[in-house]
Length: 116
Image (cartoon, rainbow, N blue to C red; front, side):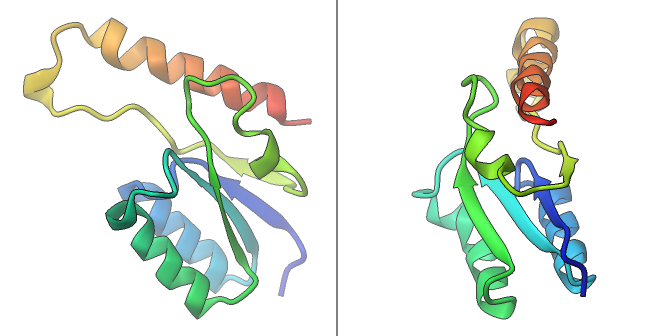
């Protein structure tokens, strides 16, 4: 069992949920972020993991576009896996730079100042 705590951003996403599971299986404690804890369908798989690994997984609300929203989730973490990213269906993208790249960069800037 490791005493390290890892932060995984975007915990309800396809890649992140698998990373959260892998870290829990390896014995790590995990903090993960989601846009809204009220979105039951997105949070339910993480709640299931909380039941399977009691005391090892904490969920936090954070928004890529809101400065400082990752601070609480980062507390006590020694490793950050920044997996969160904007997601849109291809047919709804009219300006990739504005709708995808700029929010992704802003999100990285929101997470990075939190790391020490």
